[in-house]
Structure formats: structure tokens, C-alpha cells
Length: 211
Image (cartoon, rainbow, N blue to C red; front, side, top):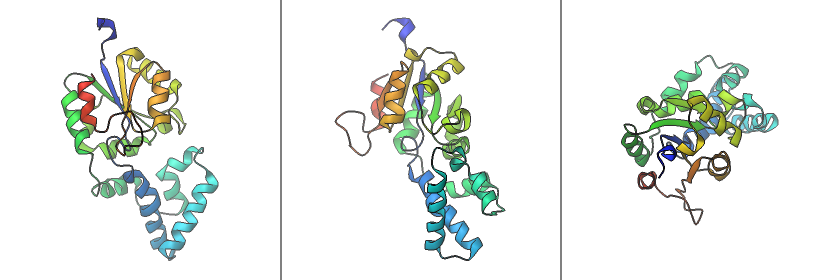
């Protein structure tokens, strides 16, 4: 490989790649309804039903959909969102292969996160592993969109001062990870933990042999 084409940056998606998707999903679909039920006196089922209607009415294109601060204020929760998220985080573990790979690559590559999740979820979700990453990018928090587009990947490359061809990105979503990253000129690998495709890697440890 030409010296100018050597990989210097490894980028990771967050949900479904480093931590189970249930970390974010359960926050919105279980914890928030539980808090709403407790505050309003509604049954858990009724609280969940009302919240789902609110989520659907707003729509995922609205950036407020992803902001705990918005929903806490709307429903009068007095707790601080980050503190609630940190306490809730204790019930979830990062994938074992994710921890192993990140710690293995840290000394040789610059590691970054490019995620759809808001910055708070990335920072809290990573826990102590956060210190291994030089930059954390959220499409919602940093670019005000719920999709990771080729333009976002190029903006990230510009921000860290590296050519796309010197970056590898790995994530579990075809439409938000592999396709747009490749369209931006980044080498990308699809993490297929659930064996949905005929290609991709099944375990993050496979990435070590591809760098």
C-alpha cells in the first residue's frame, strides 16, 4: 500500500456496534414511560401509549425527538437528564469484542465515533472507554440531522484533517454506515451481528485483520 493511502483513523458507529441498541431504545420506550406513569398516576400501559403517540406525532425528522431535555421539560420531570442516563447506564454493558478491539487499536490509530445518537448518549454509553477516542461526532447534536450522509462523513474528515481514503468506518447499519461512508470515499465495513447479510463482519475482532 502507498504510504499516502495508509489508514490512520478508525471510526465506529455507537448503537449496535459498541453497545446494544437496547441502551437507547429502552431509555425511550421503557424508562421515559415509567417516569411519566409515576408522575402522572397513569398506568404504565397508558403512559406508554400516550408517549408513543407524542413520539409519532412529532416524527423522527424533528431534532427535539432525540433530546431528553425536551421531553423532561415537557412532562415536568425534575431530574437532570444526564444523571438519570448515567444511573440507567449501569444495566447495560458494551460488547466484549468492542472493548477488546478499541483497546487494541488505541495505540496505533486515531479513534473516533460517528453516530446518529445524541452526544449525551455517546459520552455516557462509552463510559471509561471514552478516553480512547479523540473525537465524538453526533449527526443530531453536531449536524442537526438524524441521518449520517456522505456529506457528514466528509465534514468529519475535514474537521480532523484527514483524507477519506485514510479512514475506516465500521457500523451495523447499511444505510447510515456502509453506504454513505463509502460514497464519501471511506473504506467501510458492515458489522452484521445478526447475520442478516451475505457479507460484512460478524464480530468486531475481524476488523483487526482488515487494517
